[in-house]
Image (cartoon, rainbow, N blue to C red; front, side, top):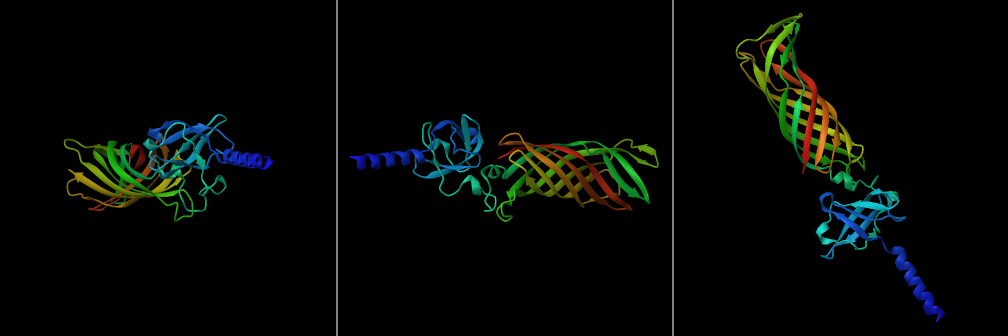
Length: 285
């Protein structure tokens, strides 16, 4: 009898030791579940949930307090799980070796990858250039624009560093040049004013500090489309930009950046630049 009780006690103790907490709430819009907090549901720990289909998906603890823990997934169909279902600790990873040297992206970073649509406002209102060895400043309008970009994670080839490459293309609506100033003398343009719109291709490298904030630096290449500049033609040139990105949710982000947009011209005009602050809003798919 003592042997039987010992075996039953051992089995029961083992079962309790490996049993995980139950799912209390499911948030399909953010791919998250909430469970009761235990000693093992620490931030960064990974857990497995079995779907109705029989397959398993991976969750990672992203928030925890004394009462509950929030787990997030990037590969689970939340319609396949239910409230009250048990979760179990993953046997393949732990918080001690959490994705820092393996070259595998953490779940929160996977959510930052992908395609975005952009709307923005450019505060750049000075077109600077040189002609006949003199510095000119053209007063130009600010402009709205739109575009798209794609973000690709470089976590794996960089051995776990949260780096990404971001490539994009934007279009700025036409802006008029109202005047030009040289030697403190300003000439206002009359009648039909010269104007130009701007296509801008860019490539940024971004360091993601966490799931909400990242800093970036990169290069841009301008494709100006001028009108009413007479015999002056504006041409493409290489520039650069730097800035920061703030994620407001899984699908919305705001960027602040300073751009140095360079443009080439003919007829003895050189060093054309349109520099200034740009604020962008992005919808992430």
